[in-house]
Image (cartoon, rainbow, N blue to C red):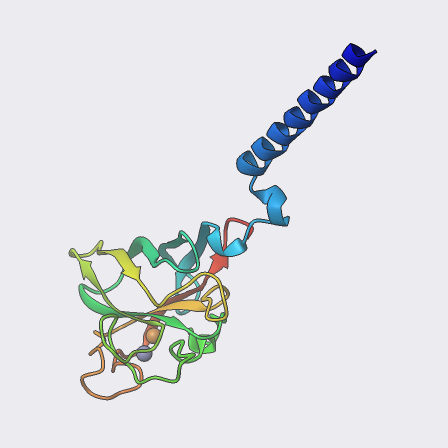
Length: 198
Ligand SMILES: [Cu+2]
Ligand SMILES: [Zn+2]
């Protein structure tokens, strides 16, 4: 009789420890079970922009955006073909429209109400990405390779649904005090869209 109780107690303890180990394993291996959905802030995000000439008729390149998390910098890469050789202002503008020769894109994206600057300026618009360099004769190409700490693909200052605008002239990075860097006409633009379904 006493032996039987001891066996039963032993079996219950054994099962109890088993359940505890299983639970702990699930807790460690599947962190999502702790609080439902994983925080979206830790999600890798990608965006894309298909640049077209201001008249909308010519495809000029693709600009890719990637960001590890809402806290990390955003990498902006791509190529732009068909610009005149030299430096061209390259910005993110506040609106997503590309109509009316890119005028529908509005002003430089400036949620913190700052003065115009360059990407490394203390004071700058979030959209101030400086210049890209177009090289070559005839078939020109500009390589875009930017890492920026203000441009984000998520959160309240997200650039998703806004636009990229490339200008005819060099951006003076704030030297003249002009609100758009005296970069001249808009020669190409596109709407930035999400490509990872986030
Ligand atoms: Cu611009
Ligand atoms: Zn600006």
